[in-house]
Amino acid sequence: MIKWIGAFMGYYFFRFPGAMMGFFIGGIIDNYKNNSKSVFQTRFSSSQTGKLQLNLLALAATVIKADGQVKTQELQFVRNFFIANYGSDQAAIIFETFNEQIKKEVQNISDLAILFVERSTYETRLQVLHFLFGVGNADGNVSSSELDKINQIAYALGIRTSDFDSIKAMFIKDTGSSYKVLEILPSASNDEVKKAYREMAKRYHPDKLQSKDPALIKGAQEKFQEVQKAYETIQKERNL
Image (cartoon, rainbow, N blue to C red; front, top):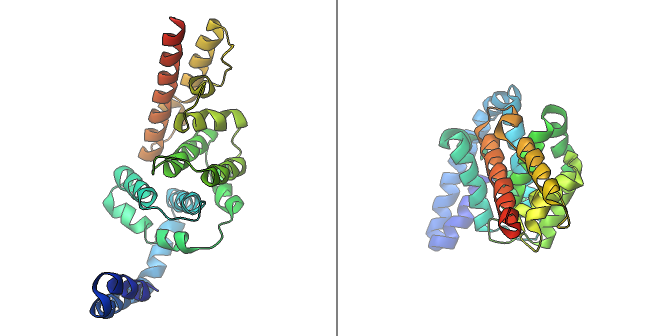
């Protein structure tokens, strides 16, 4: 498969000579992958973290393809995310399957989500949702089709509607976004605002995650900061 991708890319940049070279190099890579496939599968079959990472990539691919376009910004966001949090070597291993996920016509969201439901905490699933919104927003806008797909994934992950709306408000800003982040109405009293902030800050505090995974910890920190920003915005509006 890679040899044909190599041929196509080679032709795109260097026409016929590039196609021949791409086909040759791709064939070498294909042979290497076939010889090492069992090693790769064994490596991840014994690692729950590895399985979660692969499913996370598959969910990201589902969001990327939601609007019928595979945008460079979104692909790069996912790649940078894994390199920054897991290192270039492990990210390279994980990304051996990413192109396959992108090319698949249909992804079974329920099958991808069940691993997170069965083997991770609710707080971890909130981090997954936060990451997927980041993927959709990588090009500066979460399209309606991407939002619909993320909503489907959130449902499969068992995310409560209030938590979905809260994280959504961190990426899609509109009137009352700060209140949505804190999961309250603009008509809430000052005491209710303070109570909501304490509850949300506690829910999204990185220590609550109970995980050593750097990517999940980073996501929790980002959401925790968004909760603080939302509260500070309301404080300024109300002169609290």
